[in-house]
Amino acid sequence: MALLPLSPVEKRTVFAPNGDSDMGAVTAELAAHIGCQAGPIRLLRGIEGRTGGFGLAHIKANDGREGRILGLGFLSIEHYVRRIATAYDFVGQQDDGRLVFICDQGGCFNHLICQWDGELNLWSVTTAIPKRNMRGVNVLWDRKGVNAA
Image 1 (cartoon, rainbow, N blue to C red):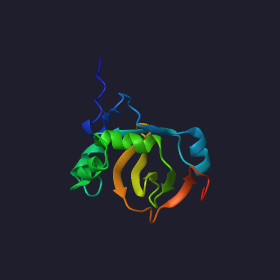
Image 2 (cartoon, rainbow, N blue to C red; image 1 turned 90 degrees about the horizontal axis):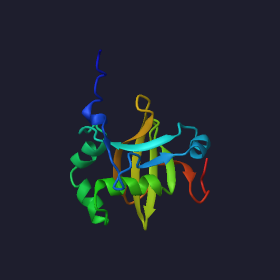
Image 3 (cartoon, one colour; image 1 turned 30 degrees about the horizontal axis):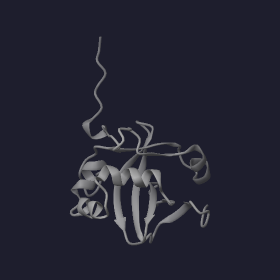
Image 4 (cartoon, rainbow, N blue to C red; image 1 turned 30 degrees about the vertical axis):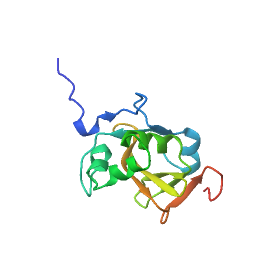
């Protein structure tokens, strides 16, 4: 009897603060509206790397990013990702097809960039970045219905 190969370490799920494997979701309704796959948003262990990096390892490897996130009052990167993935105000799309979920926190625009992982059938967090603006984001959906595609 052959054993199934283990998933690579970098594709292991980092659990949300409440113990869930999903940080959030792209609902069927949102997916139909913006023309993408519906599915869970998950933070994976990931790998470091300026190009090709993703997940928790990639976010932690960026100099000062974890400190900036904690400085916003979040207890951890996982709390930060969960907040954006469940309470986003805007959804945009990058030229490469990645989705950008943005949570406006009093003038700080928290970006969560995700790409579809067809192997795992989910939206994988590439990175998370607190920014001062939303410049350069092609907004496809807005919670208030303004600028929605």
